[in-house]
Length: 428
Ligand SMILES: *Cc1c(COP(=O)(O)O)cnc(C)c1O
Ligand code: SF4
Image (cartoon, helix red, strand yellow):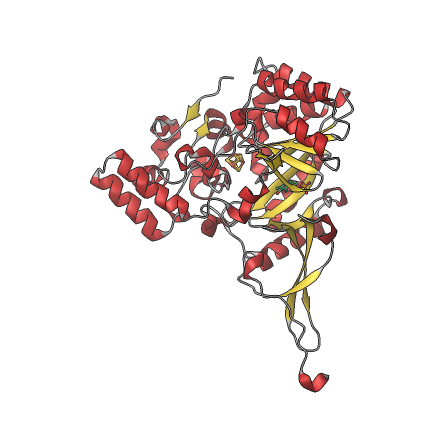
């Protein structure tokens, strides 16, 4: 199986494009000026149900549509394209729109650590025990999710890329931080790198013999976008990748694949089941995570089915995220109240083995804020969200539930009003 990538220049060659009206194709071209489009032959031929493309979760996940942009922004780009403005002028308009879409949510750039006084731009270190590593060659993906919050990294001319060539510095950083136990390779998608490239990083880590490194994680969507990464019968490099995983677990380091799945349809192909089995045979565990996305998975039935299937296939449901406030979030966002309802409706009907999943959380500036519950005061009918940080920059601040005023429209923690102690003079 050879990978064949589609981008905005060649997407019209996709056989199924015959099923789409011309205006939809033009819409894809216009929106892709802002939200970069990328797909491949596996996504197109095996994941999307083209007969129902308009509502198909895998289509919406990969093909941009005009509702993902504000109407005025869409019209502006459309005008520029139709007017035939020179490419650099269209790009300028697109960049202005991108910058207005909050390209760096939750102050990610403030998580860049320093080593001996120098910044480590390819690393983020927010929580005491875990550091994220963004290997330079992993700053892209097999396909682009339309909702992706990492998109500024793919749009190179914005100059917002995290990148780093040297893993040596990461090792040194680990030595200097004894509480660091986990290294999470992320991107983009680190599984876009060849096993040889990843091996170079891993061998360096092995040589450094970091006593405090207990777990390596790879955050990846390859089980959705290109499961052949793990299938030797289709891909000559796959065995090398599996052998590498085995070398990691043989070292006594826990290897966790953080698999990104948004919908059970992504697990429908037998290639995925085979890839999962091969990964697990190396001693690695697979944990699954996804944001809750309007138009893709905003239903309890989708989540319950997905989690049960994941357990069935040998994976561990891990995180349900609230969609971040970045990029085309207005299209994908689900209010916190609705998110909590979807979560509880789903978790109530799943196997208890799927209850490893953490109730919906927001990766906010201070940490991961989880919606624990909605509480009503029986005396006056006032409603509150019960929230806690399951992760916080200051680990001492985790697992301390607090109340915020209920708001059925709020989509992020900063829209919630804190509950103030109301002390009246007459009470004193
Ligand atoms: C979510 C996240 C992690 C990983 O957190 P876990 O709760 O250990 O899965 C690490 N760093 C950052 C910045 C994160 O947002
Ligand atoms: S796989 Fe992850 S990083 Fe890549 S486009 Fe999708 S959400 Fe973004």
